Image (tube, rainbow, N blue to C red; front, side, top):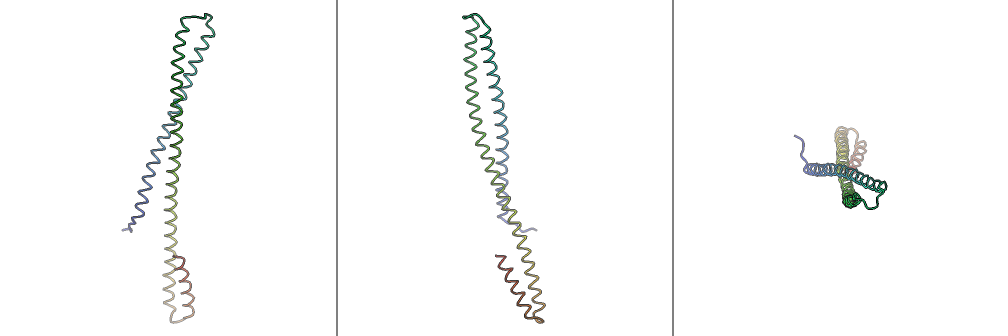
Length: 167
């Protein structure tokens, strides 16, 4: 059974939590961008309707027509809607900016955790290699200790260097 490391578990759990939050914010960002697009198309339709009313006014030769009164009411209503849509656009745009910041922060944290894990894995592999070298050198020293004591001294120096690198 593999050795269970509580720190690895906690890092994995933290990564999963951040990844879930990242996914949630990413979905929220997509929804907000769609909403912004819808608001812009609604604003465009309102502008087109306002332009139609102004064109109809220009073509109407009567100064006081009954249609003018209705057009004025409709213009007020459309301009009120336009202001509401502009407020909604501003609100959604601000939320998009904040959500993008959150997405970037979550992405940074996820990448940092991933890099730390990769670095930790590389360090473990490096330590394993050093330990294997150390074991080989110790066994070699044992074999040659009776035959070549000077060579043992050289091997002990290299063992010492490996131990320093392990720190």
